[in-house]
Image 1 (cartoon, rainbow, N blue to C red):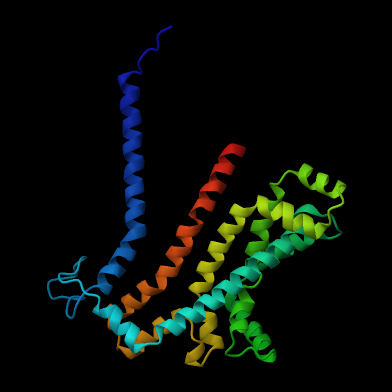
Image 2: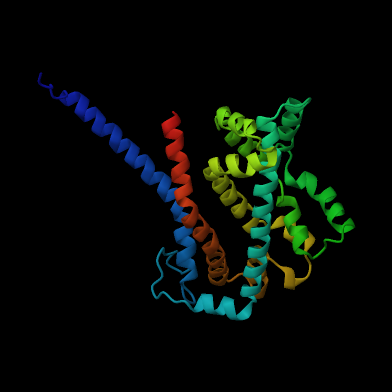
Length: 285
């Protein structure tokens, strides 16, 4: 039995739809990469190229790395990097452990008021941080966490979004695996550590990246809690460039580009977990 070729009208329609999808993807890519490329271009420009009389140019006429050297030599950028990295690693580690510990009973254990606890948890996600920062600041001061790394980690140690996200991941794990482990005499804590956490690794990696980006780019809470430059994180250090160089956008752009490097590195190392999670979702569908 021979296969009939598709009609020309159908083939033309498919090509037209593919062209529209490609155009939409190009527009989305331009909107996403455009600000990043402009920031990179500004950081490589020389004196007088940021705002020329003939208009702004996308690519510098004479690219230079002098802006990066100026920022690195004039500000303790290494200290800012270490402070931000320390806060981010501690916050992400605490967030993954505490959120998974809270999400496990909400997903796999039955106890009175579980649904109300979950509803209350979802309600807290609707509160902006600006509403909570005053009582949180009073709590940090009363605990003696002013100008401390622990004080910066505290608001990110356990988040409602992380609990909700991991609860949904635990619900996707087949209940038969848990029942078999319980019949073998495995305790709840060992079950959580040895059975459930390895099965939700892609979700843990995704939450880890989200948490790292949120902590790394946090500006408001360190601005409130810190007044000692020795404890400044990278966003506060980049903000100091505005005052130090009187709004010279070349140096500000160079500092911002330097702050983006760890985020790109984290995403590059965790990309395969995103792909693994996508493939699992496709197989389940």
